[in-house]
View 1 (cartoon, rainbow, N blue to C red):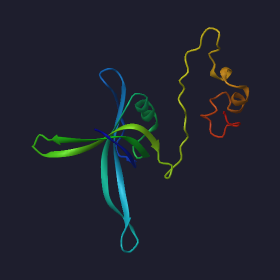
View 2 (cartoon, one colour; view 1 turned 30 degrees about the vertical axis):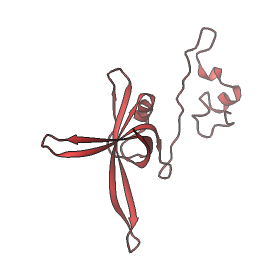
View 3 (cartoon, one colour; view 1 turned 180 degrees about the vertical axis):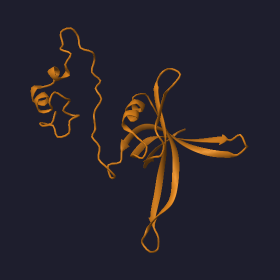
View 4 (cartoon, rainbow, N blue to C red; view 1 turned 60 degrees about the vertical axis):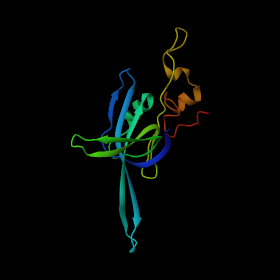
Length: 159
C-alpha cells in the first residue's frame, strides 16, 4: 500500500537526470522541509528538518530537469515510500522516498513563468510546418507568433 503525500520544501541537491533500463527518463533529488516555530520571546527558530528523496519518471522527469535547480522552493505531490537500509558497518536506517506525480514552484516564495509543452503531431504535406500559421490570427498576432499560453501578458486570452 502506498500513501499520497504533499510536501513543501527546498531542493537540497542538484537534480540528477537518468534513465531506466527501458529508456524512460528519470530524475531524482533530495528535498528538505524546515519546520519553524516561535520561541517564548517571539523569535523564529528552526525546530527540525525532514529529508526526502524525490524520484520522477517520464515526461515529469524531463520537464523537471529543464526547470528545477538546487535551492528552488517546490511543492511535491506523490506516493510515500519508506525503505529500510543497512550499511556496510551494520548500521541500519530508514529512508523516506516520494515517487512524484506532480512538482510545482512554491509561489509564496517567488515567481515563475509557466511554459506549456507542445504535444503537436508532425505536419502533413497539406499543413504548413510553422506553428504560427496554424494559430488563430488574433492569438498569433498578439503573441508574436508564439503560443499565447506560453507568453506572459499576451492579449487576448487564447480561450
